[in-house]
Length: 287
Length: 335
Image (cartoon, rainbow over all chains, first blue to last red; front, side):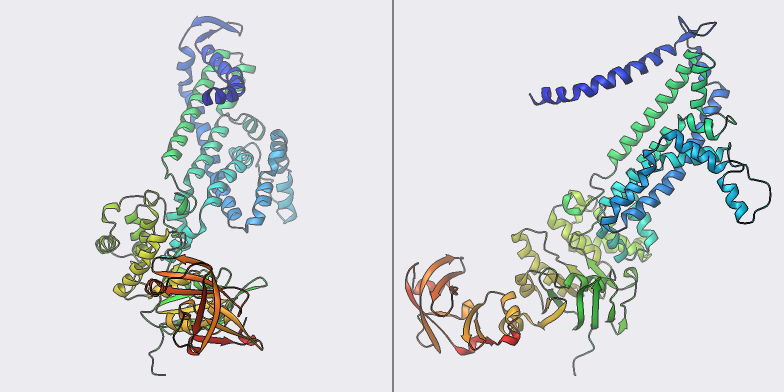
């Protein structure tokens, strides 16, 4: 009875997921095994050429490059986000909701608008250059836009709130007496962080990092706008295959590999956080 | 003074949080090797005092002299004082062994010494077989022993215990009271226990300090604070006390076990009626309504005495006591 009830409750969500997630993914998956038509479109003869081409050095290189940018973005976002979450969690309880609210406030505006704002900032004669001029800088304007740094900055900025939220929760749940006990037993503040606070909140840190990585590696808006076509990330290649090169099967093959990579990472992260100590947070009484 | 210099000496200690004064001008000495209890209701300032001793709060004014050195502004990791937390605060991601070894690792002791001392401590707390368990795989009593071992292994000059038995059930608590006292004698470390449980303080402590509103109300041996409470509050807080209005702003106080039933000789006698009786095994408690006070008087008889002269609810009885067994409080010290 109870199972039937919970199944009934889950049905709409499952139907939604199936129709809009499983079916399209399956279609893409299928598409990857067909030949490209001569004038675009799809020719329905089976082939593994598309998948093989993904591992061609050119495309494998773009994959690696994307992974490097996504990895750097994840690393920087984790450092900044964890610091912010740590600071928020150490404030008096009554201020914390407001501070968290401020941290996620940029989410309320559109992703594209937020990214365009960075163009205004990083432009050759943008706000940053103008700021330098006010401070007396007279040399050539630095070229900040259309660089790898600009793309990473954009990714970090956009996904930072994920890390703040993912790491704030375990930090706020941590019994403050546990860190005090470490100090009491002779550990410095830094040793306490390294041996007690960080290990106990690591699942949140990993979750935040994986989130940023997965969202960044497939991103195509930020590299297009802030990278200015100077270099490509894998998302841009997929975009081009579908919309300009008209090679849907190859675009599908690239997407498939990307989805497999992301799924694998998310599964690893779930496994890792499940294996981390059961009662990692909270007071010892609730163990 | 012929007594040796105290191990711990608090001089005019005060601490406020915003406009709330948690501890006010507190002066107190604790001798070496003493089992000392800080007793008070919640909000009496006892926990703030303990946190100042551990180094987690800095006093606004005053000194904390440990072996003659003022440690009031020394960081918690740099003072030879350890605290056993009320929540135990065991490290959930470490085994029992790693929890106990942590403090010695912070002292950068050689590996072999750490292993030796941890093994020794594990056998003292009788948890040898559970050394590789995580805290969440232990019972409440086992966790309590790990928390104690983790603090004791540092061989501190002073061990602070915040409601050490608060999280245990009643039977285990009674056993652990004696166990803690035995352990304190064995290791020869000064213990300061914070508790709100007056029975616990009476049973364990060599001396008790009663705190109220951030001040030290009374300090003395369990016998002194029980038999000679300084005021009505202290009398009421420690044990059970009958209060009788003696007129002229004076209140007479007498312990239930000092009231006798049908006394042969007594300085004062009064008649009353038993309105309730409760048998507790060791003793019998009677509520006797008299003309002396609106509330019934509580009388505690040993089972022996109760058997000699059985009484039932509704019986008319005569109570009596001697003046030497009563205390008189005037208005000034009634609060």
